[in-house]
Amino acid sequence: MSNESKEKPLVYTIEECKQCGLKTKRTFKLGDFVYKIGELCSKCKGSTLVTMIYAEYIKT
Amino acid sequence: MNLTDIQLQINPFFPTGSDTSSWWIYLIWILPIFFFMLYGQRFQMWMVLNDVSKSVNKLKGMRETARKEAIEYAKSINPNVDNTERIDRFLEYFAIMPVDMDPSGIIKKLQHLMRIRDDRVKAEVMAMAPSMDNISASKMENVLEAATLLHMIYKVVRHFFLMGKKTTSMFFVVQLQMIMPILLQEAEALTKAIGTFKAGQPIGDGIGPMIVGKLMLNKEKKTIAKETVVSEDQYSGRTLYFMKAEGPAGNVGEPGTAVEKLINEMGVKINSVIMIDAALKLEGEKTGELAEGVGAAIGGIGVDRFQIEEVATRHGIPVYAIIIKQSILDAITVMKKEIAESIEKVTKSVFNVIEEKTKEGDSVLIIGVGNTLGVAQ
Image 1: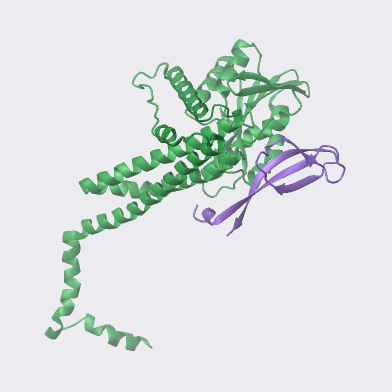
Image 2 (image 1 turned 90 degrees about the vertical axis):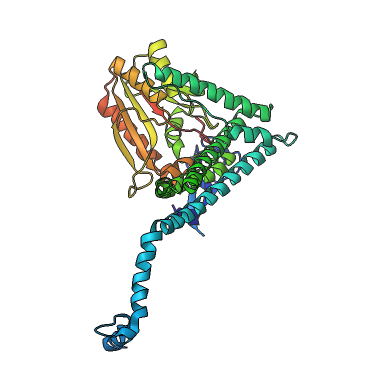
């Protein structure tokens, strides 16, 4: 617990392209939720789906 | 400095023979013995009270932060109304548990009580901002639940601390000191959870709904019970029914009632039930690890578990459980990467159970248990 309290969470949203399968990781934005239609794919301009939202902890 | 030098320096503190000039040395040894014989317990009490007092102040700080966050969140939704008084009143809200001297029928009473409580909470939240959408309302409910729990922990701890001080009873304060690390851990988890609820981010407890939500994508969803949806699909000659709370609002749904309805009222013949839920890990176990077992994997007050066990027993349905291990902090704060990445392992495990434990023509019910905040379907 005491170790975890010194760690800061960085929350990321993972978007997966439905066509080419490209996974993009970006910082979480308010309004994001898992299985929401995401932004257009940067590779094939296909539609993406938010497949994960998770936190990575960094030591401060 | 060698050993002889050290010995020469400490020799005066251990007078020997007829060395009467060192009487004060004897006093240094004897006085503390008398002091601790007479005042030892008071001294220990003072030390413990001091320690507990620091923890009580920490809890007070956390309670204040949670209260302020709840007020600010209400203000951000409806800036025209000051809901401070309403929130303060809400923090004192309580539910009286049914009498358990005659436990027969207590589950129905509990279910009734919890429904009244939920409806009252929802009504209070809607009164804060009548035009609030469903998702914001569920976030506000979660924030208020966390703030209420923190308020309750602080009040109970303060009660025993003051009782200990008043009665100078070691009995109260030592018990409090022993339990304090766990209480502080839970309080810290609740404080951190408030930020996650406000942002609408998925929490560790949402891993079950996240796995089932993925399996429900692009399928027709039917509302089967309060805030609970179900979908149907075919797999290797089996009919699969997927069930979860309706997201992305922060709901847990009523899986117990939903299972009763599906089997008893709708007459669906279920051959196996697979439940996926987050479970508290033991210290030393890894976060995101999965384990398989049997039985109804569902937490809470026990109403849903009772209903599922009851239906399963009456119809002779085997219930399989898959749990994803995590700490209390992981379960109520934003989902950790290790937990989110367990989705493929768990899905594989679900289909292994389907293939190994069921046969073609069977109907299998897969339930994703937990708070579905930030997870749609």
